[in-house]
Image 1: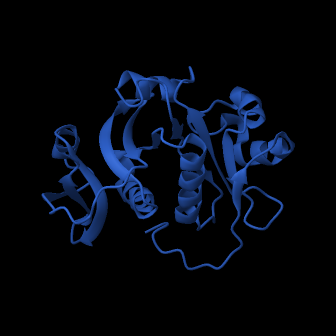
Image 2: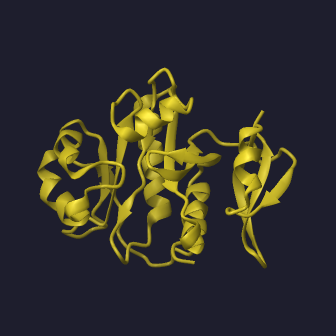
Length: 218
């Protein structure tokens, strides 16, 4: 598992990046920019306080993600609204994080990003997304485990913003509700079960890999 065990003791400090951090952000992003945020949008996002980052105690940025308001015309928020998530434009969505090669604190980064996002948007809904790539299933399982361990809840798997996305909600799911079923991340039944009102807030590991625990979200 790439990120599941985070045992390396390093400095951790996630914060909203400032325009002065532009050079460090560009060094991390490279020509492509942040996932779901084109490079030419970085300056405006920095100026609006929409990018979180972690320098991990060093001079180089180690992780970054954009926190985009749902009313934005960017592809990701627009796709979420079209799919019925935050259709009123209130709230925000956390883009897929970009991390340095040896960064081992993704779970902490997500937890802090979630805390900052919910504080900023108060009673409005906060979402997060992560692409699901069947060709790289172990990596996707590991990343999904990080999102769930950070307190996010998997609510949908559907095409969105040019990819097949896992859609996570910042609102938790009561674990006391009886588990309905366990499914693997690549099970064709998973998207249908999520559409029927089930959600995933926890998981386990079995002989076939990661097992998502579906519970009623009603």
